[in-house]
Image 1: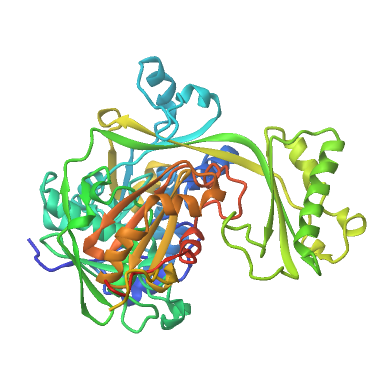
Image 2: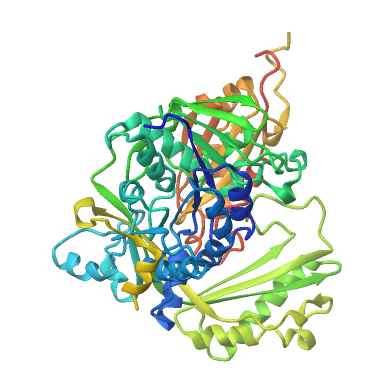
Length: 462
Length: 116
């Protein structure tokens, strides 16, 4: 067994992250593994909307493009593997698109692995009949209240199918929904052969995955002393050097911008967590309160001492349901009394929608620059002469929201004076989605893995 | 030595700590990291869930839970139902709670006593 640390770099923290970052990270990072984490809570809802129009879509289309760009680097760096959840709702289509690009570049022999089984939408009706409880984790509501409006439902799979696919020789692994930290833990388990109940090591590598999963947030992005971060415009994406004992060193490519310090890493450690003594993943419940951070060199922070225990017997599910329509419009409001004028203009818009015969289910008038972003506690020291009015609505009826969209432009002649920004165009109605977190018994969601050379993927799916 | 009768000065939280915030569904969390061990000891006493809850009353949130991470000098605050429905459903510009950390750093509170 190879005892060197495993260098895992994460080149994407969400779909829409910097397009060049993964390529730069692969070029300069001396990586063993490039991970790409694309799926925020709502990304699958967007993918489901795409798939409803084209059954062959529903995956992160940036990834095959990236893979094509990575082609020469994959040729130069024989040890580099790529692990990503770009498969979204349609890992098979994503794999086919990847296979096309690989074959097109003469890399048809590249072993391409796919992890599926996370998509549980088709099973929910049957499970409900069987009395499987998929109640909302926060509100306790039964899923029957939204069952006819569900657009996607996916369980968070863990590291094991990723590790198995890599151990079977895959160089590129495409998954659907998996826990973010599992993208790092899977390759670490494949390299070091840890037992699946070696909680300390599983916890250590999961912490590494948690720190790098949001990309540049670990390397100077969002750091409170932003003005002290060197070359943030050229920020290096994070690398975790995972050691055989489960500890890791967080770093970034040489000569890249950004900053890795105990400070940037500690801020990221507490990002989007709940109880730090039980940070839950499908693989292990991690105790973050036992670890230590040590600055061990320029842009190098050692993370050591995380502990873990067996995870629960249920997996987290992220389901999304249709929740009517929404739209939002913004205008700049200038002059003395700008805040009062903005509120008046917002009220006029909503009142005209009402007079047109529509009752909007929900609406909000915000006055940005006058303390609305975090309502209630941040007031400017003196009345602002310039604010941004933002009016947002939601309604089950598309027509009501579309009427709202038409009521912005008339303000140009029939609203208060000193309002600008009409040239950006009418707001547009878009579907609104509700998020439904739940838990499902683990044994109901077996992962499936498949591995074949790219050329074979193409032949199979013709 | 300062007199016990002199009230501690009112300070800005952001001069003693830094913060990062984010979302999970309709739940926000704010990680507050103290600048040093003395600041952390003070924060454990001073930055109670009740004070954070009161500060963010405008969010219409339900409860605030606090967790201690003495190993990295951090407190983690979990704000239940703080996001007006969460990223998908909230009508707010900041539906993901990204600004809550920066907002919390503007909290004014009685500072550490000079005698301690």
